[in-house]
Image (cartoon, rainbow, N blue to C red; front, top):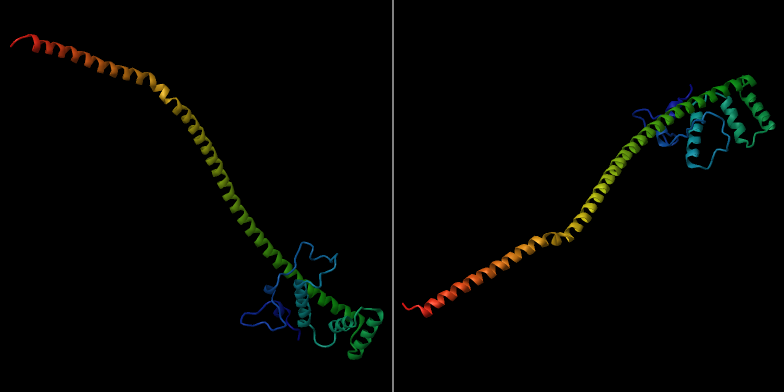
Length: 225
């Protein structure tokens, strides 16, 4: 019976993944708008993430390996031989025929399409999941940026207002300092007039008192009781 591919990629509730299993949550699946197209540049085989994902696919193929000898065993035989060549394919095909007489050119191709279709199915699922997560992150990022930009705009507007208020205060201070320097001058005429009157008042009192005392003294001196 065919092994369950899903169990390799998705941990069933209550189950613990084995040492050879990897769940999709354990790595970031490589997704991009062109991820369904043939790679135009070499895949970075030594990259840890790429290595892990490639291992997931290898484990996935192992998990859906159909019983008996089929394309997958043929595939592993050719791959293990190193660089594929015509001789490698011929020897692998002869070996396959010696193991299972039902193996044929068409059967191998049909089985190959089955495995390729499963790879594409899983890839599409991971692309969809990855793009969904990217979309969620993008929305979250936009929301955070929008909130921060609003705070910046509000703070900038407040700062502009405070600068305007500060400029107005500086202008008021400058104006009032100018007025302060002229306060004495503005009050001087009135102050001078009052001081003059106070001085005249003192003089008038003294003059009046002197005259009165002179008469008083004259009475005391010349008028007998």
